[in-house]
Length: 195
Image 1 (cartoon, rainbow, N blue to C red):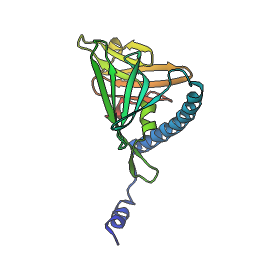
Image 2 (tube, rainbow, N blue to C red):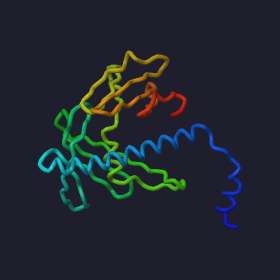
Image 3 (tube, rainbow, N blue to C red):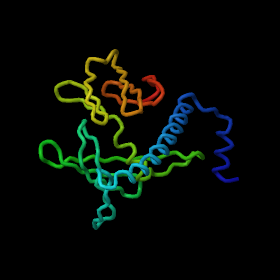
Image 4 (tube, one colour):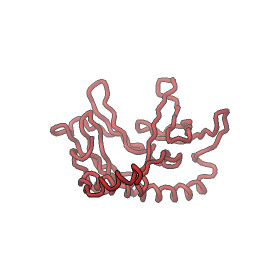
């Protein structure tokens, strides 16, 4: 019997908590949403032949994309580089004339529980997800596509709930003051279920 079989046998009697089940449900929803966005992106690429679509530009390090991206409520042209290992790097012109940079990445859980790096397409789909910014003047802002929403006065006991809409999509956002946020297409998540 291998170590893997021993671990399976030892942990097979354990039951998952509700939080893990909720996370599995959330991942299934995000996978379904990703598949719908992929299909929509394919249609959009055909329609956007001369518009503001994604353009490939070869560089010495590999493939670099020029994309349209919403940053702080403003649509911006940016350079997107994917390393093939689940991480990305974006450069864009910032308001002060300098070059802004953002990056990130992640992994996805497969149905069998194994991890794999996110694909380039999966990362591109999440770039326009809502963002929260805590400014130096003490205000708190949510950015979602072209929307700039100040939520500073909406916090009660360190938690704020914001309903976001864009075209035919509605998202429910739960924000913990300086402790993260969670979005769902179905309902406001309890602040106890994340972070």
